[in-house]
Amino acid sequence: QSALAQPASVSRSPGQSITISCTGTSSDVATYKYVSWYQQYPGKAPNLIIFEVNNRPSGISSRFSGSRSGNTASLTISGLQAEDEASYYCSSYSSNSIVVFGGGTKVTVL
Amino acid sequence: QVQLQESGPGLVKPSQTLSLTCNVFGDSISSGNFYWSWIRQPAGKGLEWIGRIHTSGSTKYNAALKSRVTISSDMSKNQFSLRLSSITAADTALYFCARYDFNNFDAFDIWGQGTMVIVSS
Image (cartoon, rainbow over all chains, first blue to last red; front, side, top):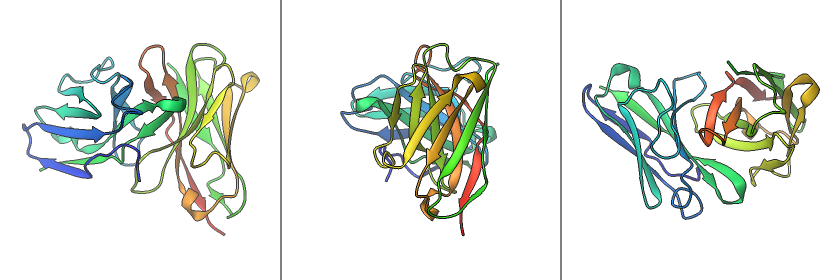
């Protein structure tokens, strides 16, 4: 069981928007701004797409955005494209200086 | 450009100790404020944080693995390592090393390509 809860899968058509939730606790998501999101293609290493809740690293499309409300963080992908078909993982800094991950969400572009 | 590269045996027998090394290229592991980390991913499953070593040498481990894990660094070789003892089939996974940059991102900004470890007799 993962420390952060994510939906296992989400499917949408191209051009639509999707929002992936990431639910934690007062020990992680609710307390620390250090929530990040990663995109992972099969057999590849994860790639950072959102850091500190809602910031994008250089080179990441503006179609990706992040937010947080209470103990739930969210990743929104707008204008869904075929290349967005991948797995997405949230992560948070947690008490006792550890890091926790979500179980991952597989995004399918119909 | 900083790059990380994992190395180690692809096959380990049950009850043995797994040893993996992460070579760091393009930066010194003794400089900056980074956590040099290990993360693993069983086939078809999610990411699991194993632990990290700070530039200063301090370590922190996943509580579920703490009794079996040791992460160390070798500044002279610019590498850090993972040792996981009493291996079982449940430790079969793709193992990644990654850099956690808590100056700029507070996130894992650089990852190795991963090395597959299979536990089998």
